[in-house]
Image 1 (cartoon, rainbow over the protein chains, first blue to last red):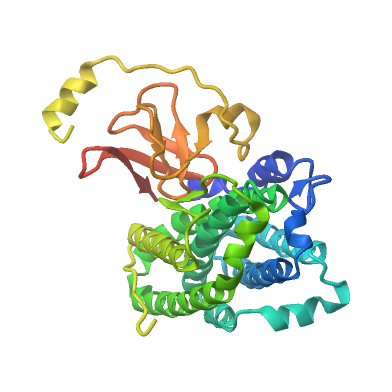
Image 2: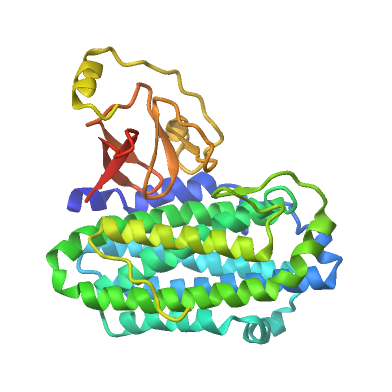
Length: 291
Length: 97
């Protein structure tokens, strides 16, 4: 175990991340890049962009609280070191998505009220389930909730958003690309570290699976509300940016898909990934009821 | 390629080798970049020297043809894996913890 954990050292993080793909970036994108004019010039599109970015800020604030809490719960120093790097990654994500809110016209004094106004209440519940486990000192449940469920969700959502923004809004797509690269390490650590711990503590399975079920319930409710709120602006966004060619996400062309089709492919992708990742570490995906 | 005998015969055939070039993957230090590329989703056909990391979904590329039993390392997510034959006859990987 110690051997595999050595890969997750702070030195490796420095080489991959600040000295690697983030070198010469400013808030995660290339210097001088700006938000697409089509978004900034249209109040409806700008509001929709603010709304979706608020969810990213809130999700990343939860990840920051969770990963920093896990540092003190980790049973060994290599894990603490990795989680310290993850904590900085998550803080960076909070910062760059907050900067995007400012770029979209949110005044600094209005940041918290804007977040309160637009946050999806189901996303808050999703985060609360995870943070309760960490507050109670449960490292295994905390890592599954943070690095498998939350990061697995973020991984697919960021990929989908990066795909749709690649042509019309390269600045935001570049910001997302750096966070996706970070998420690869986070899910890798989650699976590798917890894979061995679950084997050592099989008695934890029912409790961890219940937490996953609760988190999946709130995640699906989050998707429902988010796509419902975004449905009105999908056509307007396409009209504003014009023909950008195919944007393939797991077999669905996002450049022509309806809001319902986008929700369906995202849900299917995330749940399929949950199922596969959990099975690899010896857990069975629990489908939520009533959603 | 479901037949184990076919695998045994294949193992006696010299492996193909490949010259690798960078494909725009910047998530690892420069000297390692040619060993990875982004997966473009369904329809992105893999070469005989390529396999998808099941953990982080990047394509791992080797200088030689990949075969069952090979051990691979994915630097972007730091997972270790072993190549196995999937039920559908394609090469897949089992992550080793």
